[in-house]
Image 1 (cartoon, rainbow, N blue to C red):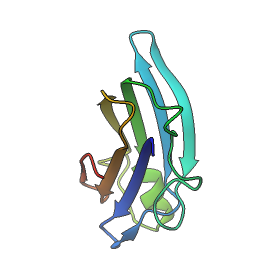
Image 2: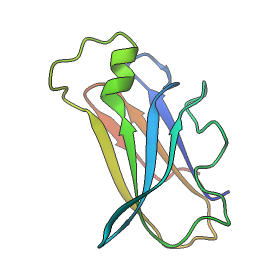
Image 3: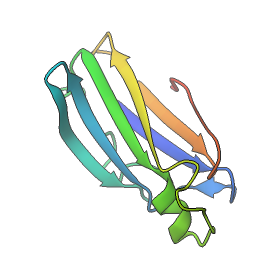
Image 4: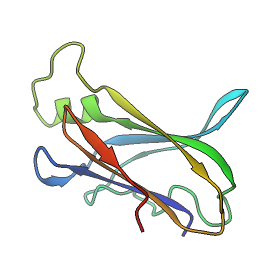
Length: 117
């Protein structure tokens, strides 16, 4: 299944539909944008996995979740600057043949992640 993500808005108790998520490959030379998506009604990428099995390579990656912009669009009054703006999550892919699911659970003031199934 490649690489997938799922974002849950625990402030409102629902999927984070409409949040923008960017996926980068990382290297000593810098970041390379691989994909940018706006999450669907289920809080997932609209076209399924961010990277398919064929596209996934061993290496390091960064997901950037646009948390503040999402919560502002939901009508949440955030200070300027917000406590959380964009949440970067750096992770490694050791076995490209496996499925990597990287979910985010968030509010305007906290987030958590894990390697899901």
